[in-house]
Image (cartoon, rainbow, N blue to C red):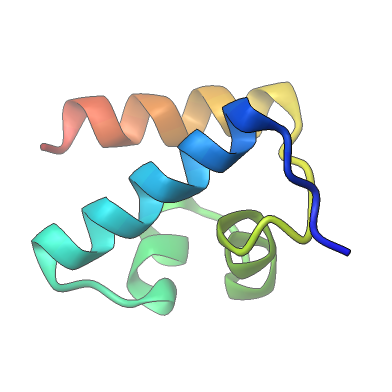
Length: 66
């Protein structure tokens, strides 16, 4: 079952919104974030809990690449 803590649900939602806004797919986002596509997909689909460094990395990317 997916990991569904509200803070990670919000992060996943922001990742999806960013992809839609910029017409990107999981592969492009994973490359931009310097992580594997599998890891990115697991985080986005909430099958895995991001570690604190991943949370910072993703939040920073989303904020600085509007």
